[in-house]
Image 1 (cartoon, rainbow, N blue to C red):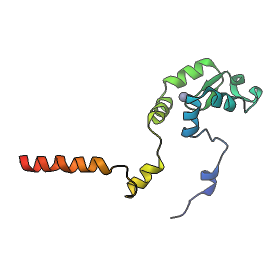
Image 2 (cartoon, rainbow, N blue to C red; image 1 turned 90 degrees about the vertical axis):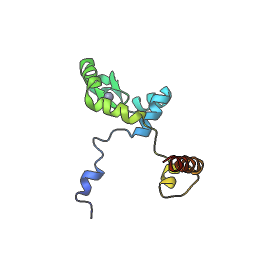
Image 3 (cartoon, rainbow, N blue to C red; image 1 turned 180 degrees about the vertical axis):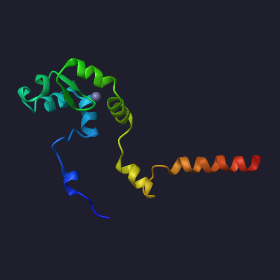
Image 4 (tube, protein in one colour; image 1 turned 30 degrees about the vertical axis):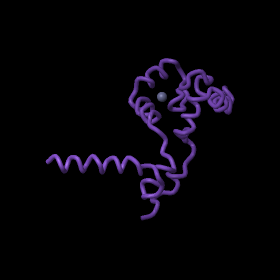
Length: 119
Ligand SMILES: [Zn+2]
């Protein structure tokens, strides 16, 4: 199974910020302002006045931004941002490494035994 069209995967023209970058934006105003100031205002839609932080997108009018904030893609993105980032620890736990769930599993076994005795 190969990559059907490499160009599709490597296109960067419409690349938006990654979720971890947006999370950092939401947590620190400095991080956000660095990103906003990276492009001169003259090159941005609506002179860079209407920006959706969650989606890392510029809008040309306030009306468009308001409509966007009510829309499905925006709400989907907000939901994605609420989830915890995937960590290395979780990845190791998934393949049976690490100590992430050693203690809860012992507790679970105890609970299972109780159920078996009750039935
Ligand atoms: Zn948005």
